[in-house]
Length: 239
Image (cartoon, rainbow, N blue to C red):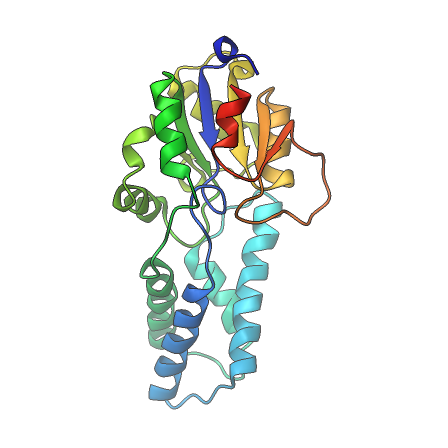
């Protein structure tokens, strides 16, 4: 890459900027167990795990078909795996607990994110987030970026729950680049961890693609990015 060619860098959120954790699943399991037992609904841990797996499968299927999921839809899918019908008042409690478990789990930046963003801004590059939102709304994702002291580095946020499509749909990339004031996508770089969404979406929109493998290494097949980095600071060498 040559410094003068690029004007913007966009970043995926999960496993690129922010580390994912299984702590929220543990918290969700504890909350649901408590609610169900308090309402005299017996449940085994295996049944509960099967329910959460079905909820994830509901989201994952929609995600891959570019259909927006709702928290209520994910929980409804999960409840199909429980041994008895769940009354609506208890279902509402489970929905609240599902979200509470995700929102209350502490999040952390992946290594060297803040230092990298700071140096990119010092190069006068415009920065944005392009994120596929699951059951945690973008309002909460923004607040985590604020809590972790990196929100200020970004000039625009392209969240799927606001734009209405998931990556690799061109709309989420185009709206983000428009928000950054970039008319020529070839002047921008997209950094993410997934081949199907980040790499394919960037490539289809004529952006330079960078796959970050420091959070997780995507096991799925797919075209490789133009550049693969393990440490965020490596992107500075590309410029």
